[in-house]
Amino acid sequence: MTQNVAKLVFWGVRGSTPTLERETWRYGGNTPCVEVTAPGGVRFILDCGTGLRMLGNKWILLNGDTPTEAHILITHYHWDHIQGIPFFHPFYQSQGHFHFYGFQSKPLGPDSLRQVFEAQLASPYFPAGTSTMTALRSFREIAGGEKWEIQGTRVSAAWVNHPQGCLGYRLDMPVGSIVYATDNEPGVPELDRSLRQFAHGADVLIYDAQYSPEQLSSTRKGWGHSSWLEGVKIARDSKVKNLILFHHDPDSSDSTVDGFLSAARQEFPGTWAATEGMSVTLSERGVNVALRNSRMGQRRRLRFTATVSGQSDSGDQFEEKATVRDLSLQGAYLFLNSRPRLQSELRVVIEATGDQNRSSVLSLRGTVVHCQSGREKNQNGVGVLFIEESDPDPPRD
Ligand SMILES: [Zn+2]
Ligand SMILES: [Zn+2]
Image (cartoon, rainbow, N blue to C red; front, top):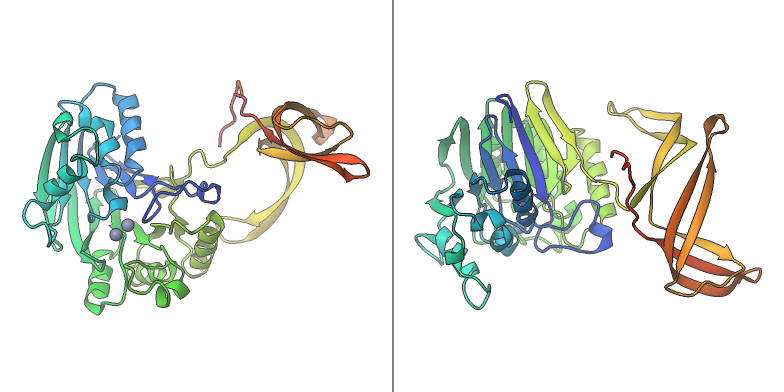
């Protein structure tokens, strides 16, 4: 990481509990974990939800046995923010050094953070105790209103409104500022005001947008969370440049989150919806957002023309002819005279006519998942699920 770039990566964006349902795959089902690499390479982790496991695997892959040092800022001790701790492999590497920051919980008293950590790994909840975690761990108790400096990054903490307490964090770096304010319910005037001051002028505000505004004012009132509309109000009042909707409800499908995002963008164009693998780069050229591995299913190269319409970066509508160069494929429904056996293999070869009479041939292997006799004109209706085959030259996202 160079001196003048900071990078933020989302490893978990889901609130409350992880989700595995297909309808939540696009935004992702892991609970909160955000990695920030500050200019000069200092590493921060915001919350230790289930996304932390994948972050650990990436660091092991990149660094091997080289010990890792990171500063871990915990907002609060609800399960969704600490559940990844036992599964973060770098904790089991000696010579690694991790600095934890969190608040003193009322029921636990002094040394809360260490207690939470150790209780989570205690018998009978986990097979190995903390003694197996050989990395050096240090714990620092902090409170809202505190500010401190870590190798050129100014860190601040602020109380937000959540059952049993919660902290928001702000990282001010030479290239810009990030505010992480999740698990917050608006409605306490003093905290609503202080959050606006805390977020003032931030380049990126990551904010709790778990519920719809309607849910927040009725069935989910008092549950400790917020909505995209509150996020928009804070972003506007605080002159934030980019608002990232975060902590998606486990019962929100991808299309529900799509709806929140598009409603928020009508009010505040610089809005994004946090997605697993999404990265945000801050540099002197501004803020750049990128998605990774966002198209699921198998990818196949082919070539055909299509009419594409949508909205440009500047908000204008466009429509143009384009050449499609690859497609993601999951399955197909076909009518066949033959009656293939359920769970048997099918080969489907599709020819697509492209521009300038060039054509592509797609050869796909699938498994029969459905077969209905005489579905149409005595033909059988056949459902096929394509089997993942490695593409020798995978296309880029
Ligand atoms: Zn949470
Ligand atoms: Zn919580």
